[in-house]
Image (cartoon, rainbow, N blue to C red; front, side, top):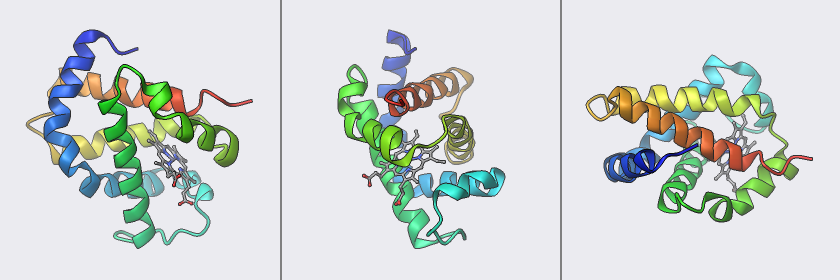
Length: 141
Ligand code: ZNH
């Protein structure tokens, strides 16, 4: 879980990444579909091509959720409660998929913010994605 050092690191780097992440997050979604084709089954109506409007819109929503997570880093379960319900109960995304998206998110961040992503920052971002994923799958039954 996130230590106080991780939280401080994330609050600080997110000032640099957060504002432009909505532009890049759709690439992370596209990379997920490309690298892990089974993930496409959750999006049967999506046009899976680079720059597709659905991927753009979805990427922006996911980026907004991450912004919210960092904004409420001490109280993520409450801040992401609706999303948790949605993923656990309605979308029923198999938890393994969160690892896949985490991977393509970190790759996309490393590609777009090479000077920000030192090994220490990468580790904190990895833990952030783990923490957000844990909240989103916390209500499975
Ligand atoms: Zn998810 C949706 C976030 C992961 C699948 N998502 C969604 C949204 C958001 C999110 C914000 C929107 C919602 C509303 O609208 O209400 N996700 C998210 C995050 C994450 C995720 C943050 C991590 C981190 N997801 C995920 C995965 C998957 C998914 C992994 C699979 C693969 N989602 C999904 C779907 C949906 C969503 C399917 C729906 C879409 C549409 O549009 O339809």
